[in-house]
Amino acid sequence: MSTFYLLPPRPLLGERLAGFLQTFLPGLDWDIARRAELIDLLDSAALAHTDVYLVYRDDLPAGELPARALADGFGAAPGDEVVEVRPGARPGEVTNHRWRLGSLDSTLQQARSASDGMHGPVASTPGLLQAP
Image 1: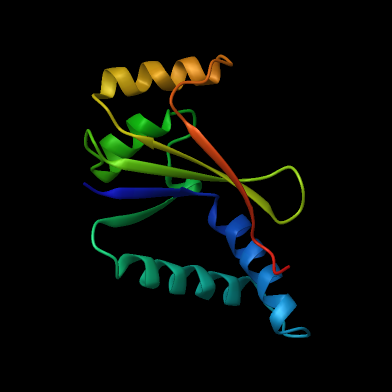
Image 2: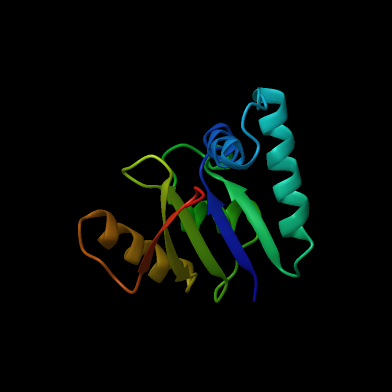
């Protein structure tokens, strides 16, 4: 089984990573080019793990449900785990939702139910992408 990390768009993730690094390396400039390099480093580090794939929201077709986009565009299959990472309401806060891709029809039905305000078997874990 594979694990797909569905991450925020690259510019937002780069901004969050740069902000995190500012706490340890104050005064360094993390311009757009450096932020892109941080994303490349993250990709390389994560892909060193077996069956791990990073997918950025800006790579998904607009308006398409994540389950369909991951299956159609990235090779996700029934049983694969998806970890959706989203920015939280407060600066530096992130949340993640973990779920498994079932048959595409059942996964799409669960996604529609969740978007209607009903919550299926989805776990939510808040976290911070900031130093304490």
